[in-house]
Length: 268
Image 1: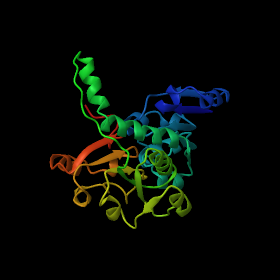
Image 2: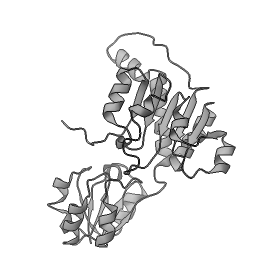
Image 3: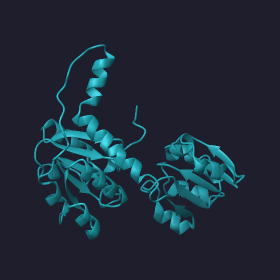
């Protein structure tokens, strides 16, 4: 069996996943993703399966693969918005992901971003690197109001840690876990609009699909108090970029902290 491995996270992180794959005696070829369809189309038909990251696997790529050897796709991660799941099902190509593979890591990264911003770590780093000495006044996150949009695995991990930091929690989810929310004193809201109305920090923890694309937009910003900080560790496409720029320019958005972009890697 011949496998194409494109996930850089899989390739760059030693662990049992690499040991398992190497012990299966498959032929494994590697490319550095995320790959655009133009990079996949010339090669996809040569592989029985692909272990992917956020590669562009649309219907055209899937048809080309099916006409060759492609039988299965494994997403090293959770979000499968880059894969045309409907086309894969019609073509009989199995698609799997890895639920729970990174929920702790993402929750920790949320706080890495938030504390870096509130404590001016990024600014002090650059100042010190230039051999200068300037003290910037940071802020505490204790007592800040955190709104969590999406209370799945990652949202819950963020909530547990935020509780330890002494943040006041509210949340919105279509299918909330009431027992969990009660335990961690999360005030459940009945809509996104009511969630964002009176918070200091908004955490985005949604899947990206047609219903959530651009869900964070200027009309929603107008319902927020000025200076709100948005942390997006989910998907870049959740946020309308033009709205975000306008929101920052109008000083509604105090900060946008993210490790995801709508187009990855960034265009030149």
